[in-house]
Length: 226
Figure 1: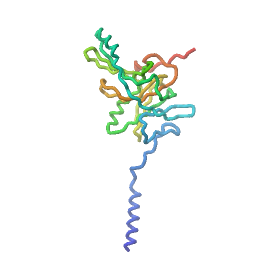
Figure 2: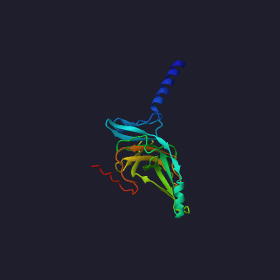
Figure 3: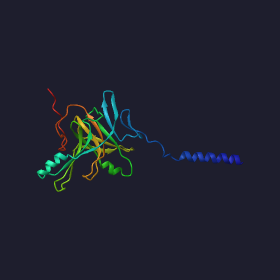
Figure 4: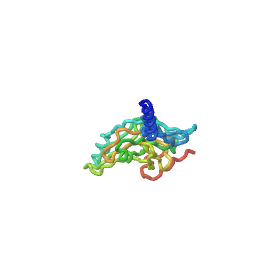
């Protein structure tokens, strides 16, 4: 009898375990293109869905550190005419290491943690002004008395939405990207603060004019060479 009782207890426990749904299952990967899914794990923060000759692929957009330029000489001259100072925040090099070939690329940004809603609001896609050595992300300016503080940048208009069942934010530019340099940045609400890293990438092709996104209107495509 004790042995039979033990068998019945084991069967009852197994039936109870089968009836309770498991909440520890690995979430199903979200497919963003035929045969292409967002990773549930890994260390990537920003991915770009690129369209290549062989089909859609996810490109890992790597982070790079932001450096500050005080523009000391320029600000000295500006002070002589009672004009306020400015400081730029840049990333080293004239071009990003990551190449996104499609002008219709879509970005995916991983948002996690208790402050996910705050972080989601801080995500911006920015067009970068290039020079021989650096690419400018933002420019901070104020008047000579320290007022009228502004964080100036060329933001690309985008639509954003969370991918259901994941921690990924989908960032879709409203218009095809122009050839040039871009970066995803988490910008603090306070305009006096700047990001310490950005996720930068290049879109190859003939570059357009200066500050094509400054007006907020859809940018005009660069004129084709005859």
